[in-house]
Length: 199
Length: 181
Image 1 (cartoon, rainbow over the protein chains, first blue to last red):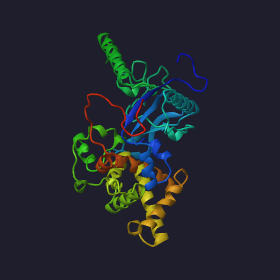
Image 2 (cartoon, each protein chain N blue to C red):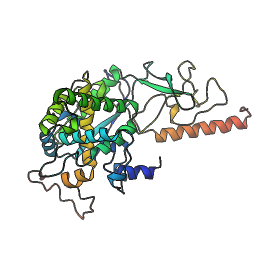
Image 3 (cartoon, rainbow over the protein chains, first blue to last red):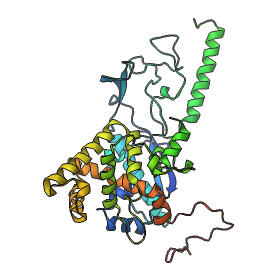
Image 4 (cartoon, chains in turn red, green):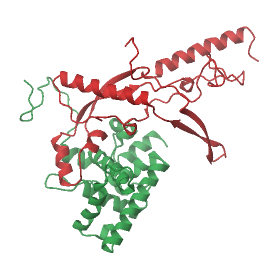
């Protein structure tokens, strides 16, 4: 935990869950279709318990947002494009999680029904529940549009106070950090206003 | 769209766990009143037939076509956007063209063995990401299985789901051979 891993940067966490339908992974690992597929689904008992990961992706120039040159919304404003290219570090992290989770399940006396095995880029998915980033904060105006207080480097009276200021995708659910950052920014704003530094 | 409206529509046939809404479903409306968002009626008809080949009816429970999983696919695709819609439209068109080329009829009019032959070709490329039919089949299969499990038929007749029940004590799994010591 407190020492860097030799094969990947940053950290991940594991969540345990269950459900009454099979996982997508289990379905893709059952071959074929028809009566045999239905029987196999029955045999693995469809309902599932699972372990899945949430990991910090490596911050890099390969992950960025820009404006689509071709597609606009109904007001003619270009739509944003998210460029999320997973890198070796991200894959190594997911592989480590895969291997540790199998160890944990087997040590607890469980049987692994389906696992990614060798993790590929296609196995990684964007966390659809937690939207963070795209207007990140940072000291360097060349790599971050906002400063450490959520204030635009370019436009002094523009502050951003939601999860879009995150500089990376965290391995934790982001709400508490989001509230904390907004609170911190609000106090800073109030302080600036008291000193008459907002126009 | 109002959340409440969405719940009602999802209740038409199947629930979208992909949308994280499965546990919120309380109401159902008849499938006849569902308005398709992504597909034309003939596409929905073909998708239901494909669903039925993927998870067929048997003595135990009706299959995914009879569970109207195509309506779940319609909901799924309409929420997943442009690329997913394109994948399905091209997949449906591919099935149609192969049916006409090999059996001189559209897919819905084929005999069961002929439909099976078409699906077998798609399934053979299931793991091949360079094959358009394989890419379509992979997604179709996953979503057919999930949609079936979320459908009324899938839940009650296939899964024997009886709803959550409060129990005074937990006896463990009662299936033969599963009982934990």
